[in-house]
Length: 471
Image (cartoon, rainbow, N blue to C red; front, side, top):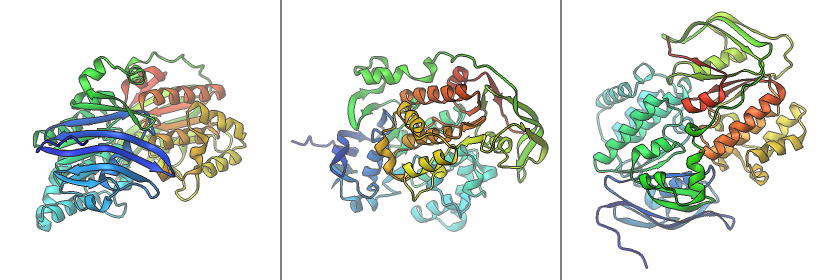
């Protein structure tokens, strides 16, 4: 028997399930959100959190089938009736997706993309829409980047741009998928304030996050997902203070704030030496002339506000980008492919039309890495080998991030620049991935440069920290 919904319910999900080929990816999920209410989904990577949001939107990948019922603002639909909910996109229902790089049009500048939303949904004139876009982007710290293309933005800047576009329609039902993963603490807190504003204005919020601090700050209810099933559900404050399920306790216990420092590695000869290097994009100076030496075995945390050039610094050191001034010298003893990068956006680093198995086997063959070693890495990272038959778009962001880590380690790099390598992982999987990464680099004496916004993670891992503040 179905419980009658309250008249002010904005979003209700009843017995939602997702299947593919007879296999259940998600099952038995039910909840209801009224005006001003928040719900956060936490749990293991690959548990179906993002699929749940896609099912509500009516935008599941091909081959996946949703069951159950979804009610939006009093309109009840079958979960598999995607067309019935697509008409509500923008005005009634909005989703901030996990991958901002896939949400932005790469051929259009940022400000016109935002202005288009105001023009189409609010029916504003072109000049009024453009003025509103400039103001909103300025408030998001993107005033200087308003006329940049998406590929000219850092990961955190793209995250803020997509958030502005998602919120522009004023949809009362807002879903946000890992909305703070590329943001420093300041912008993370400002994003939380922004979402609270949605609640204060009479909307409801469904958040997917691996950041337990964000979940706690948003308040409301929480659902803990594991293996596609809700293992715990209730008030976020009560669940965080006294978790009932062993997995929830493990999840909270694995938060980086609770980590003990890892053992210090042995440091050897210089791998890369940079003197007087600087880089700017147009009139925006990312980092002023700086000197830097990276030695084998070192673990350097690279930190700083979004858009200060952390990823760009890695590209300069690896030889992927020329500095505007200064020089970079790399050890003459380095073999080919000894300098490697683990990209912040795992989707963009995989060929989209071949299987993950083929990508891994190609890398193993190129670097003469035994396949059994790859299998061992995958097992350490808890990646089921049957997952490799899929293409990149058919796995979760967290699963793809772990596969990307396994792939880059096939090269046995002398220097690995890891750009937010665990941002899409739940705390338990993140801890396992970091342990695998440190074990692999310690085996070979490789240097590690780790870009992270998490001060606790940096403190546990790094031998020293490089802070970029912008010029």
